[in-house]
Length: 216
Image 1 (cartoon, rainbow, N blue to C red):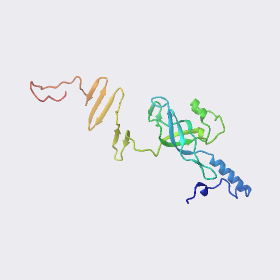
Image 2 (spheres, rainbow, N blue to C red):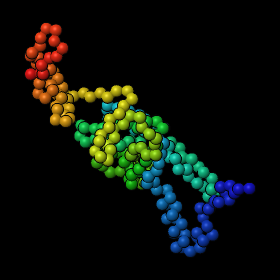
Image 3 (cartoon, one colour):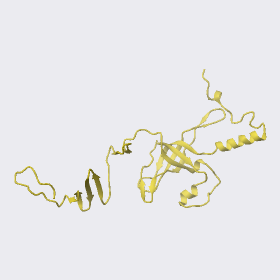
Image 4 (tube, rainbow, N blue to C red):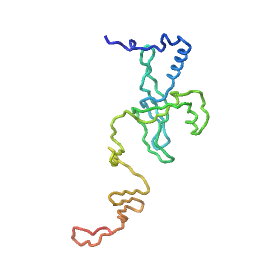
């Protein structure tokens, strides 16, 4: 019969844990370090906010269970309302919000960051907690599957933009340059190599002819 978790268990204390003052101190330090949170792989349970607006928050579930002294797994509970990271500089941003079910990394701050989250300004930590679940930041996805909508940079420099639905580009002026040809779209109209399509004419057109002259 295969051994269960308890047969492989390592109790939190060992016969030598309190044999000397040094060993007792080492045990207490180890227990304190075990309560520090650094980074964990988590699963996104819910997403709040986001889209075209301020950065939202996520509820995440740590995926690495806790283990008690008898070797039994103790699942974590959901950590609520953790801000997530967005690529943003000033008013410029890449909006790619997390989705429910995403796997990603959550980092935990060395001090209480709740006041900074609320005020967006510097200030003292409102509590003495350190490396706590309550001070997590969701850093983004990892261990996820193959995307169907993506922007991809290949090794040779090729850039692929793929969407199964649509690609929308909104700007006062859009300029596309390729192979020495410049296509410009603006309020004035559509220009190809500086020639405005709406106002150019075709000379040399004859009645019943099959061809026109080039744009001028």
